[in-house]
Each structure stands twice: as structure tokens, then as C-alpha cells.
Amino acid sequence: MDTALLTEAVDPTLVLLTVEEAARRLRIGRTVCYRLINSGELESITIGHLRRVPADAVPEFVSRRRNIHRPAQTAA
Image 1 (spheres, rainbow, N blue to C red):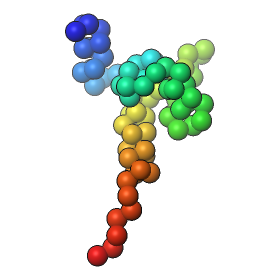
Image 2 (cartoon, rainbow, N blue to C red):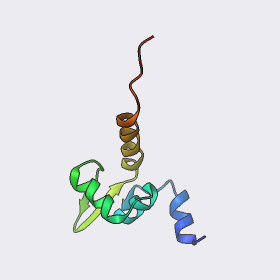
Image 3 (tube, rainbow, N blue to C red):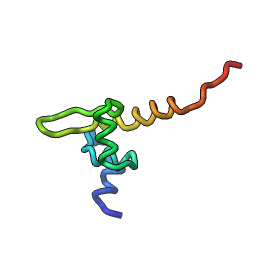
Image 4 (cartoon, helix red, strand yellow):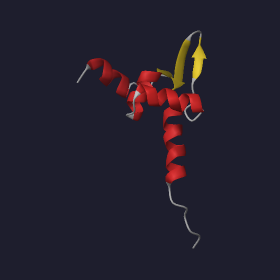
């Protein structure tokens, strides 16, 4: 395995991710990741001319998507 990929995968100290890193964590393409950012579904910020995705925005996005697609629980 590529050492850079391994370091990124296990480095909990990263606060901001590039769009490519966020896409890799979500196992989606870069274009789809930009589409999610442009639609507001995936949070991002700009620093100068750079687009970055907060590391905690990735699991939050997944959690929201899971809740949307989870069948409604019936009250017992």
C-alpha cells in the first residue's frame, strides 16, 4: 500500500482535507465530491484560493445520508 495513502487513512490529526482526500474517504470520484460541495450537501471552506473539506464533515455527511435512507421506525 502507498505510504501516503496509509498515513492519510489513519491520521486523526488532519483537520482539513483536500477535495481529493474527502472523495477518497467517501470512495467517490472527485467530480461527484465537487457536486456534493456545490449543492451544499458536503461542507467545505475556502482558504485563499484553496477548497478544503473539514475532516468532521465527512462522517456528518454519511450520517445525514444514512438517516435519509433509513426506513422510518414504527412506534411500538
